Length: 528
Image 1 (cartoon, rainbow, N blue to C red):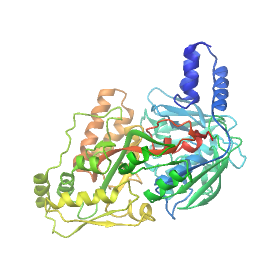
Image 2 (cartoon, rainbow, N blue to C red):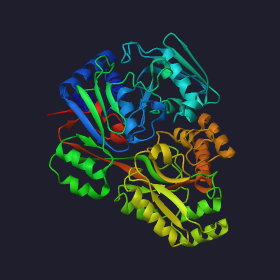
Image 3 (cartoon, rainbow, N blue to C red):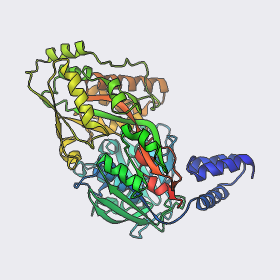
Image 4 (cartoon, one colour):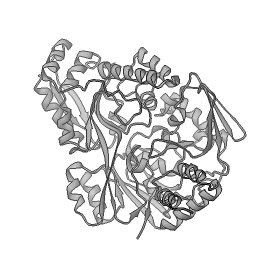
């Protein structure tokens, strides 16, 4: 083999190049797909140290958490489900779709019908083989509003689902060139029989099996011996410990109780950098920390009041003080330059006390306290961010009252329930997925209760628009609608700031979500 191939092989073995890309490039060099896959598996196995129990300390866990992937809404259940679950496809660190349970993807010319060939021999943890029928049943369960699925806004666009042999066929109500990206949503873990009998059984086709699950405390796993991808799942076991307190989570990493943690407080990054054997990892992407208002609930059903609050927040101050500079300012819509159709010409909304006071007066608000709920675990620095917001709003005569809620129960009792609260979004690989999940009128996770007929019309039209400039124009109009009429206050886009111990090998930057898109425990290994 030549030097170019060796270089690619080493990058792929370390997780810096997807298997699909490696095989494609190897083919261009005259290496067969069978040979390339075999060499890559050998290289991964030679580099990765097998065995041990790899552990993560994570925030965002509650006693109300479930193994039902449909209802995962915070970091801990997201990461738990990404270990035992497997999806049709994933989006890799380069923003490309990688097949998982599906091994081949195709569509008709106008992207109204998609076919997914199911990989042969993929096994559920209960020993059953994953079938096309399981895939269809899974997708159908998420279309049921009773399932309360975070993927409801995505799967509602599928008008017909069918299976024949190893093929799944999805017909869409309207064209969608991004459908494979949408099906990488982390709620859509494929379950036996679709999960209808027991959606919280924790039985999937992922790299690890659930051994025990204590909601809000810990989840213990063992390796799935018959997992189809031998380049993933290096440890004998894995463990996720819920440690919501920032100080306790950091201490667990320093003491070696865990090997990695999420959501490092930016204020202690420099301190941790000086700790022997600890590395800080940063991934800039689409994640954003927000304050959300219900557009259908008084007093937030008044757009002048919403605009007053948007002008009353000092975005740069929050990026500096809350993120420690590990992020960028937001503009009251959930899209930034990490998205392919981002419109950089949309004017940045600035902190403007005069405009805030003007809109507040026009709203006719009676001057009673406007309650903003937050919690330490809503996002790193959420309480301090709310207090900064309170102080700047007061300068415009807006009476914000900050109410600090307990972390336990926040994502079930406050978020998407109370009309004004702090929250976060990890972002999504494409604009359609972000908007379909959280801004379409019918989306179960429309946490601002934003309902706009023109927005919904554009959302559908943009999915099937193959002209890039026209599509960008549609997304620009949608962004302006959310920015100027919606209930989202988006002061900042965050980086994922995480930390790991020196004995963790195989780490690479993945901007899709926290801890390597929830798969750090499966993709990394212990070197000692």
